[in-house]
Amino acid sequence: MDPRCALSFKLNGRQVEQDVSPRTSLADMLRNQMGLTATHIGCEQGSCGACNVMVDGKTVRSCLIFAIQLEGAEVETSQGFDDDPLMEALRDNFAKRNALQCGFCTGGMLLAARDLINMTPRPDRNEIREHISGNFCRCTGYEAIVDAIWKTAHEMPSLEGKK
View 1 (tube, helix red, strand yellow):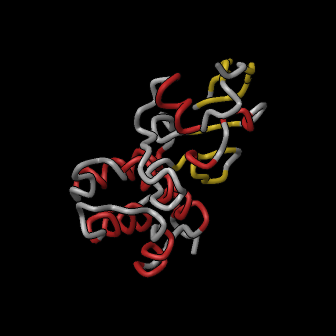
View 2 (cartoon, rainbow, N blue to C red):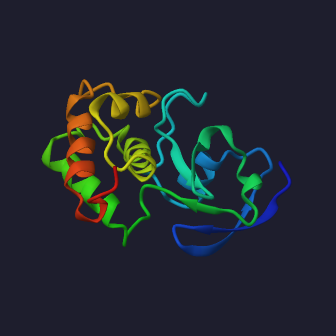
């Protein structure tokens, strides 16, 4: 049996303590120990984007990081962002445009979309496609996702005048 290590970090805005094996990935800890199942495990190689989370403000593939690396970090999953108007608008537009379908890619796709809009407030469709190119979706053909992201970016009142 693996030894356990105490870990303290901020998760979706609240301080948490967790005991983890040094070999446990962040994705496995989030899903199996913490019940945050919107972080999906797809390829386990960092290729599909289904496991995207934010660590200290940067999008990372949680299947490629050991949980023990998070000591003192701030982690946000797609299940966080309760008071975030941009994420709320993205979720709403994904639903309205039927960009969800099976939902497997949705959590990672939402985080990628939020990251893009924060970096480029008014992205064009090519910029959107390029930014989400590391996120695989097997259901939608991407057009609904691109439409939802574009609509969010171009209709958010708080983004007016930025680009």
